[in-house]
Length: 101
Image 1 (cartoon, rainbow, N blue to C red):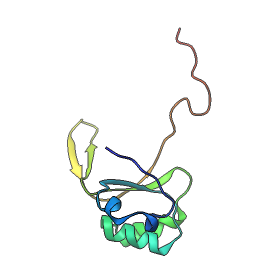
Image 2 (image 1 turned 180 degrees about the horizontal axis):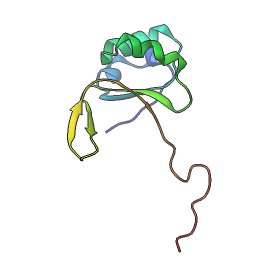
Image 3 (image 1 turned 135 degrees about the horizontal axis):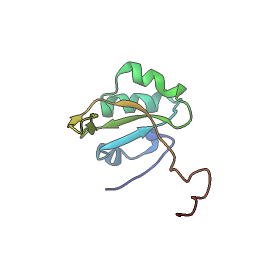
Image 4 (image 1 turned 90 degrees about the horizontal axis):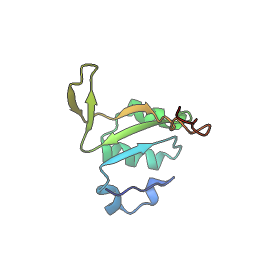
């Protein structure tokens, strides 16, 4: 797996974007970039319209392969729909972890 990051997907080589299976889109204001996301990941219009107003840690997760979704019973299913989600920082993000007693 390879990871990459950019603030402007329109500046990324199309060979790279064509081979990107998973993408997290944070707040984007450029219509050209949003149009590329809609085209490459079948992003519905209502989610594309939300992208410019995403708050801190919010993103739209998209995948060509689908996400493994688990219900409260542990049943697994694959869902290919883009999802609005929130990225959570690690538990030790704000302070050093305490000692184990």
